[in-house]
Length: 298
Length: 252
Image (tube, rainbow over all chains, first blue to last red; front, side):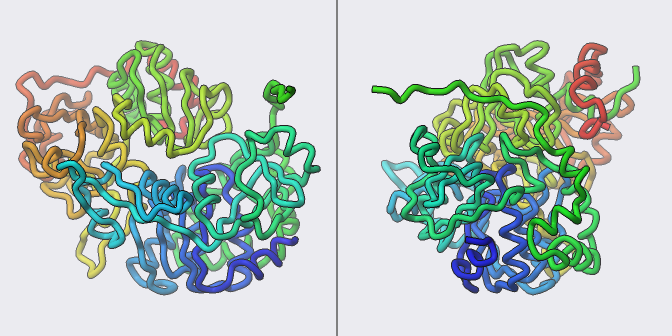
């Protein structure tokens, strides 16, 4: 399925969408840009830190609610669109349900377990308990606990290294809350750097991300995660984050950035044309580092 | 010897890491402090990164974020965040580093909403893992810019808990352990009174004085009886820092 069709079909207005779940790597930027191009509205974005992607969707007017631990730009600083939306209602007001990285992980873990909530000791005494109305404090054996209610997003958009045509996928490197998001979400859009035969996936079942019957779409979109890195495929384009940070300081600057990198291109192929071949080449692997094979023989 | 304020802060942060400790050092200057400590006095320290990584060697090259590909090379474990946070909640983490936009007398940190003159507060990025690290690690080290508007009597919002309003607060609200042990700023290093939880000036950086640091602090900052000048980075420390960050992305 094409990315365009997957977003059109499985991300209707008003959906709750989990993205950027591996933290700084494997962020499905191409999917975010397609959501912007299709003018999706009233989305609830669920994730840990999102590194710049949530800010882009907020600035483009796609977002009604943020359920996240952090919205910013990890190596460059603040998120200008997030600030403008909260402080000046530009392009419009957004609701914010504050989480920490641990509580968003627990909320999705609970969702994936089919449990109503998970108790924790984190954040006790903090004001996140006041600004996230879903949190509850309780006592267990005379000790205070924070109850983190389950989240079950409508769809998780997950970027992986490789998948077969039926959504059996391998992902590696640090995974953040990707497995929790996959198991908690009602449906999964998988975006893969490579589509491989089923034999490759079943040769190493310990590396499989999630049950494929939750996968509603498999998209082959190499380079989807740029400027974030994909282990074994390409490195992080640090400067792209800094350029975005500088460009989006003003509303006009943000509009110009979106025009150049999102509205001005139809798909990833055109995006990479705009990025330029030499810049993309500079992000390619310096060397391969293969894992030793494991023996599943019996 | 010439060095930048950031290099001094990295050296000071590295000295907070003791050999054999399990540390969270997943952001900015502490990414370099972990590499520095591993190379010098803490060869057996273990780094945990909430993206889902554990390693016992410094990453082979400079990290812009904890999730950069070099941090996965030769990692001891690449896993899920929940496993790393689970270790933190169990009490395995000796020391956690976080940054701060606003901190108060009792070491409470705000990186969420800063009240100002406007009708609506300024929106900062939020907790990330900071609130968890502040809640659950045994010791907390904060790295931040020292300005009067950032070091305030009382933060308007607690993202990452310090000692609340003082003695006994952490136990009262249900936190199992911990609290800030050091705040490394651009001007000096603060510690905390073991009984009252109040910040105390431990050292002032070369070029500063007790008075100049107090003047940039938004409350009547107490001073340790043995307060002295911060030990500047040694030649060896600077060599390692510059080897690791040759372009000075974080340290210049």
